[in-house]
Amino acid sequence: MSYVYDIVLNFNSELYEFYEWKKDDTIYHIKRINLIKVDSKIYNDLLNHKVKFNEDFIISIFNKCEYFDNRSIELMPYAFLVTDSYRVMGLLLDSSGKIIKYSSLLLDEEEYVLDLSDKLKNAFPKFSIIQKRAKNEYNTRQEKLIINVIKKDLKLDYEKKDLNKLKYLYYEYFNKQCDVPDVIYHELMSELDKNLTDKHYNLYNLIKLTYNETIEN
Image 1 (cartoon, rainbow, N blue to C red):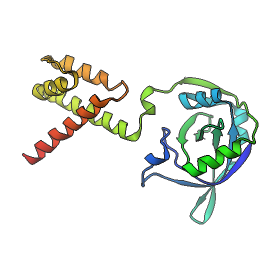
Image 2: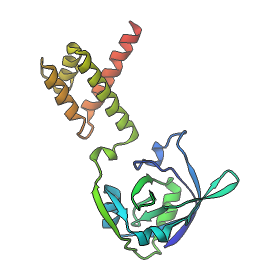
Image 3: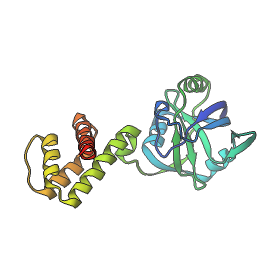
Image 4: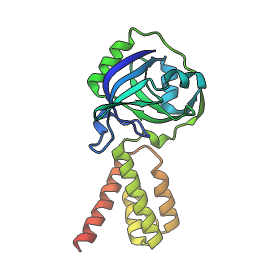
């Protein structure tokens, strides 16, 4: 293992690119953190699955990550960087070795780490795959916001039995008529599990428009 010095990380339950970071996120100014180079298969496993590292690996990184906190230096017990020389991300584990948070890097710092990784040999940390991460975990923050707004609105309309609005949204999305609330609700909700398309964004904008009309009236 090698070390990287003086970078910033923004740990979240999903991996958000640096341009999605928010002003109110907790940004850590890292003084020192381990860097581990792996092959692309291992990197993809860590990115796409919920995994648990074995005890030897947990011990090897324990308290190796330091960050600045005001005027003091604090320890982050189970944090490290992993790269395959094409990509890099920060990982935060719990005490059992499970990945609980991810962080991207700022663009210039990512480039620096990737250059540094060219000089490293591949490591083969031992871990077990628990399960594949849910597909919607890869959505951006904006996409998740859109999905949540649509879901909440559909549920509210369904519970209020607002058939006119449900029919309207259904027609705008599918370009066909339906008069059965249960069918409308379940078919629209199932569409939210798919990759977002222009249809989803249009539905979101229509819902926002109905809110604006309600407020103005």
